[in-house]
Every structure is written in C-alpha cells, then in structure tokens.
Image 1 (cartoon, rainbow, N blue to C red):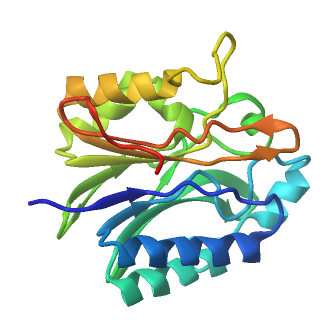
Image 2: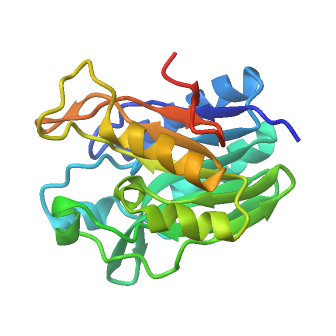
Length: 234
C-alpha cells in the first residue's frame, strides 16, 4: 500500500488555544486538499510549550478525547477522510501528560503519553504510563511517541517489534550545544538511523518560531525504511 503523509510545521502561540486549533484546522484542510492521507502535527500544538507555571499548564490542558481540541480534530478527520496524529496537553484528574492522539475518519483511535520528559517538562507533566502502543488502521499499523522519546532507541524498537509500518513523532526540537544553525539537527540524524535499523517509516513534525525566548528548529522530516529522507520542510 502507498499512502501520502504530511508532517505539518506550525507556530503555536502559548496560551492561545482556540487560535492554535483554528490554525491547525486550516493546515489540515490544506494537507488533505493536497492529497495527504496521514498527517502529523507538532508536540503540544494546541497549547504552546514553554509554560511558566504548572497552573498555566493545567489551565491549557484538556481531557482526551472529550476536550475541545480533540473534538475539533475528530470533526476535521471525518470531514477530510484523513488520519492524523497531534500533540496535546492532557489532563486526567489532577495529573497532566504530554500526550499525542491518533484520530481517523472513524473518530478517536488512541493516545500516547510521553515517557521521557525533557528538562522542565518534569515540573508540569507525569511520565507516560501507557507504553508504546501501535494501532492497526486501514492505512497501516501506526506507532507514535513524542520528541525526546526518540533519543532512546528502545522507543523505536518497541514500535517496530509490534509491526509498526510508520512511527509518527510530534516534536518541538530545540538547538543543542555546539549545533550550527545551518547544520542538520541531531534529532534528524537519530530519526534516519532508527528508521534504517528498524526498517520502518518515520514522520516527525517539528514546530517553528521562538516562544518565551526558546527557539525551535523547524526541521520536520519524513524518512523511509531505508533511513534516507523522503520529505522535509517545503
């Protein structure tokens, strides 16, 4: 089976959840109109990323799949007959998770909760507790995890051993020490190596812009099972 995949770069505005979701819907429509059957949005794309307090993070989080962001994406997936993965701040009781959702024309399919929290994420989120699930869909078996999870080769391997055809990664990659701004991101190198060693396609959607002083790379990547890139920023 051959499918068309889109990794969507966007610049969420911290705290502007309604506007961020509205913008994501515009991008979903554009990608679907261009023929995409599977679409990946960045990490925490509805809320923004650089929270100042846990209270701010809690206010911007929502339940899955009943929250307004998921419901808007569910409607969009049905309208455009598309599968999509999106990063979202999830609230369950008093706990917060850096999560992603898989949604299709049939509705909500499943979630992932980020297992490896990076830097100050530990101040806001709990480590994921749902493992590394792979979901069977009419367009293939889809695995997903988030950003820093990809620094650990076991994340890819756990998905590959469950038969994943493609791994979707919402991400907010940032520059690392010693990285020239014109140089390939270390994250991209890790994606290509993991795609090759596990013989699996990988679609990573990175955000762009600067948020509260933190720059983001905007180096989205789609890698084939050979490891070589087959898609990048347009």
